[in-house]
Length: 92
Image (tube, rainbow, N blue to C red; front, side, top):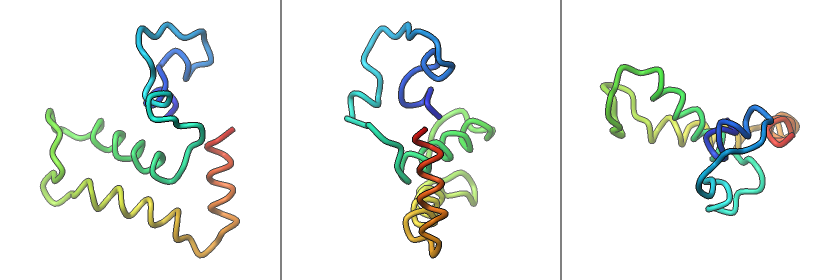
């Protein structure tokens, strides 16, 4: 997911070749949070879909609901240890 917020070259650990400021820096993103994980999931789903243009609803699939469900799953987890471990893994 790093390539979404920074750049493809930084995601692979190489020297960045970016020509503009990355999204993470533009939005003062220093850690990965539930909303970032949900956004990455949303991008992956859209990427593997057959859609050529973005829309909030794709047939029976609602991207807003999908995003909110993932955020809620993480933030409202009945297992705080799972949530902490998940976020820790994403912030390595």
